[in-house]
Image (cartoon, rainbow, N blue to C red):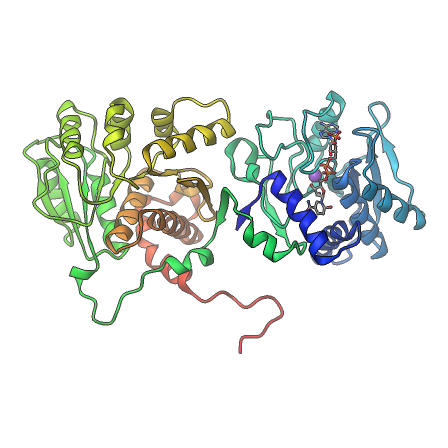
Length: 512
Ligand SMILES: NC(=O)C1=CN([C@@H]2O[C@H](COP(=O)(O)OP(=O)(O)OC[C@H]3O[C@@H](n4cnc5c(N)ncnc54)[C@H](OP(=O)(O)O)[C@@H]3O)[C@@H](O)[C@H]2O)[C@@H](O)CC1
Ligand SMILES: [K+]
């Protein structure tokens, strides 16, 4: 699903009005109706008091229109106009008039004066600012945000949590914290970034019927990725498939005490469907790997505790390297020689492979095109340098991807894959996956998919998604705490099956 920028949203809004011949206020009415339906389907007419806080622009207008629908359905609604500025948008005024016609006179909420009571029983609709926010709000408005955040009420924000900038950094504490954001037509970029995403506990995209042709023809820089979008990338296998056709991946890494990382990655390669895996480790890895993973072929290096050569006697379709590898001088030299000899297959690089690249930056120029790099935030810093905030991080990461023509997978709550000009946020996964070895499993899955013929970008997107889905399925049985990386491999088969199931019929439809 596309994530539009502010200009793109305003443009889609304008073109929809033109192409569909809509009257002024029609889109606002659709946004309000969709928000009403969301709230009404959950409250079912219960006497929960609802406090609507409306700014003076179109986001405020959405709030007023929603208040009208709620009142017409018998809800108890208190409406406040937050005087964020003197000017009022025409559609705000139109909806204010409609409320007054229904004998509702919203109270003005200004710098001075009382604040509404916000108790545990209240639902607060935050319609103070939408995507039009273009400067830091006045101090009294920031205080009002804090007042809302300190209240025990359930906060529903319209379109975006008020105070969050759509396209730049928001300082902590300068926005409303929403239990749920009802986001019109698209999710918004700040939902996915760790610094701002924490003010949005949940979000729902509500369709307000923006013109489908406009949505299709507008290119977006960022996308939100879920399973159905990835299905066309699936490469099935024919009835006559044999292991020689299902691909061969090599996993290079490990050091004494960290052989398990190679074992996890190699096991994930096979569980992701590759026909064969060869693990190359120091000599200390031979016994644990042969015993622990009988399906793997093992090549041992002359180095006892660390890899001293990357020279493989086999010709795999992909090489994954770096997990548990250490950064011993001999290993750095081996990695350098390997890259200087221009490897002819795609590479997947993780962990110490990334640390070595960051500390020997001339090696970055030797990476084959579309190499997949899988940094966690600490490794990312080594690659792209320090960043001041998440937007700065995005900019630096995108410049890095452009310079080195790589697929950069930034691991985190919404793992972000960057390739060429585009970014893809993943939708699966959970905090239980913040556990040792989780990254080794991901690297193995991605390599296993490339071995089977997936492009490096598709392998990264599908791999990240399945890894997260596997975590989501595993957590149902064992909870966050007990989840270990091995479970991610164990549940991978169920994750594949769930991914490939036909979509569930929409509500109200019968399977036929
Ligand atoms: N696009 C769509 O598809 C649809 C959009 N809809 C809704 O419209 C919303 C966008 O509405 P909007 O453009 O009127 O902006 P909004 O956020 O209400 O702000 C109002 C004005 O406040 C101002 N301002 C900015 N910062 C400020 C500050 N710190 N302190 C004080 N003032 C400040 C700034 O004006 P300025 O003062 O710069 O002239 C700004 O224009 C969108 O989020 C969605 O809810 C739906 O109705 C239907 C379809
Ligand atoms: K809002």
